[in-house]
Amino acid sequence: MQSPPLTPLAAAVLHVGPAPERVLEIECGAGDGALFLAREYPAARVRGVDRSEENVRAATARVGLDPEGRVAFKPGAPRSLPYPDDFFDLVVEIDGRPRLSEAARVLRPGGHLILVRSNAGEPPGAFGAWRLRRGLASAGIELVESADAGDGSFSVGRLRGDDLASAAE
Image (cartoon, rainbow, N blue to C red; front, top):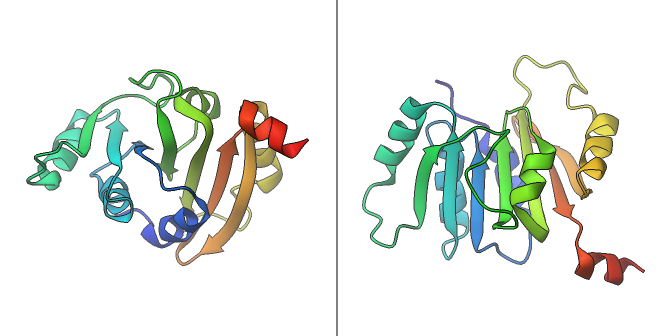
């Protein structure tokens, strides 16, 4: 299994603030992204879900000693995340096919969504900026930043909420 592109993820987190308290990585694989996020946000609780129980076991084995339970992994599918509504401040998906409405469901208003793509084997423009912006808007997410970084690209969105709507008026 190839490691995910962490350079674009590192660039994307620069556009997230304030620091999240609860973070979710969807399709976490062996946990590289979730472990990076745990280091980036030392006060946050980081969760990872993956449809493969083998990946969940591998990611869990990498956590090591975690007496506070800050990092945890469980089986879950992107179409039906095993978490309640409005639970996370940050949701991340690396090289997945995002289910934007489900990501928005578990994201609290004002929370951020990061989508990361590696460029390996993809033609230029494969991320489809127009299509992405349209998909995000239909899920109530405003695109904050989108750029190439290192070995891939990233997009950062922010879920609209009552507090954001009144600030924009």
